Length: 417
Image 1 (cartoon, rainbow, N blue to C red):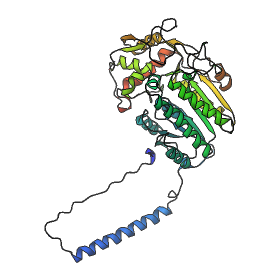
Image 2 (cartoon, helix red, strand yellow; image 1 turned 180 degrees about the vertical axis):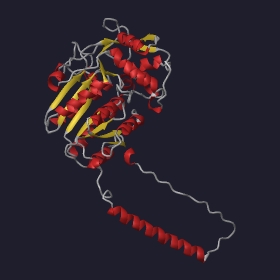
Image 3 (cartoon, rainbow, N blue to C red; image 1 turned 45 degrees about the vertical axis):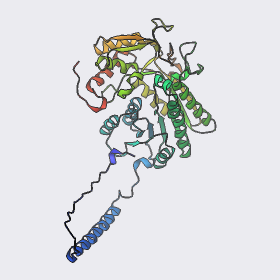
Image 4 (tube, rainbow, N blue to C red; image 1 turned 180 degrees about the horizontal axis):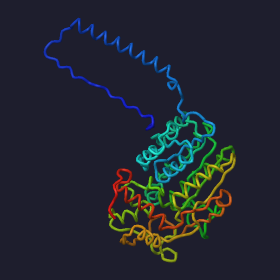
């Protein structure tokens, strides 16, 4: 378990003892040795006495106690793209935050940024753990007094899910079950679940409402729907407050430039189109590969609803504030407007100022032609609506972060344009 705010380091000195021939016992040396041992023991005892008299020696961690007026939120996957932005928003709103992430997809650099912004004791802690380890998860819940959970942690690439479906069912469905079991065992009563429009599959009618049938067509969407089903079945006999947010294609980054999207280099081929555009603009990739130009859409490319990450985390905070015991809320989080991949690429070219080379390839397995939301319900019930709807501006904000972080969170050198 890592907690940078309270990390301690220890160093042990070593000393080499040269020997030549026989070594004879020296009474004086023996006496000196015994004296040193007794002195060390006396000093240790004195230190223990002083520490015990200190008012902080036996004080519990602020994360382990419930404090009036303070809401403690566990953010799973909080080192990732969306999770880190959500943690930033919660901290700005004076929530107490614990991030749990195994760093398989997240970035420790994002956590460090948050810790530098909010260094005060009792504001933020980071725990490196895998949600697939039920014992570790139970230990985390037993040692911390959580009021709510925002569950973001998940692998989340459609293409990768078709190549390695078992990873997705384990990471999404099984791990959600582990989190839910620990919540139930430790009396944590509020769950905000990060779901996806991929659970709808390829509906016959647009836009998608919350009543649109869920018929996912790839393992990512299927795993998310299974997790939703588990949550819904559990909630029928529980007083837990549940909010399920099904969101669409996430873009953008923190408007103040503190956080951004930094996926693993080895996952570039599976990543979001925004990351692919930026990689092409920076020359990391030799152009942009657009997969699928024969869909039944106006220009033949896929149509998606692009939601800015700032709007998305705002929806999560509103959901947390509106969560009601024994009630389930299910909401689409999108702009309500679909944009084609070709439109997106043109907006990215303008945002970056780079005439990105585009290669058109066959369809990617598991993709669907057209998906965009009807956000009427979330506006009516949570008073939420997307504010950052200018595609080019959202991409410009994200591009500024990309330019100043050539190696993601590994560096912050400004890249020449």
